[in-house]
Amino acid sequence: MTTGIELVHPPTLSSAPYAYAAVTDPGRMVFTAGACPLDADGRTVAVGDVAGQARQVMANLTTALEGAGAGLGDVLKTTVYVATTERADLVAAWDVVRAAFGDHDAPSTLVGVTVLGHPDQLVEVEAVAVRDSWQEPAPPHDGSTVSA
Image (cartoon, rainbow, N blue to C red):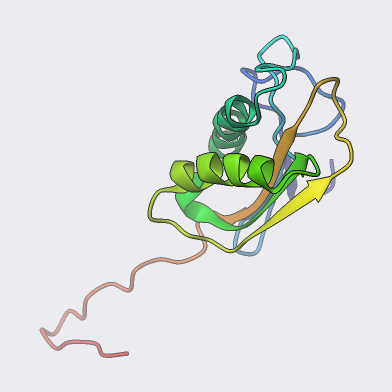
C-alpha cells in the first residue's frame, strides 16, 4: 500500500478484485469505485428493474462511503451510469439516486451507456467525497464575534 492512500474493503460487500473506496490526505478525499447492484454474495439483484438496482446501488455506495469514514452528505460529485437507450430508464435510476441524497444535492452526471460490467447489471454509481476536510472555527474566547 502506498503511503497516504487507504484502500477500503467493507466486509459486508461482496468480494471484488478492487477496493470499494480510496481515501487520501490532504482533506481526506474519498473516491469510490462504481457501486454495483450486487448482494453480499456478488449476485446481481433486481434483474430487469432499473429502480430496484438503483436502490441496491445506493445501499452499496452508502456502505462503501461509511467504510471510508464518510457518508452521502460528504459527497462532492457523483456519476450515474445506466445501461439503456431509453430516457425513462435514466429518469427511473436518477429518481432513486436523488431521493437517497435527500437535501444534499451534490453535482452529478447521468449517463446512458451500452453495457456495464456484471451480468444483468443496469445501474452503477461512483462518487467523490471528502471526510474531515473542514472544522467549524472555534468561537473567540474574548466574547467577540467572528464575521466572514
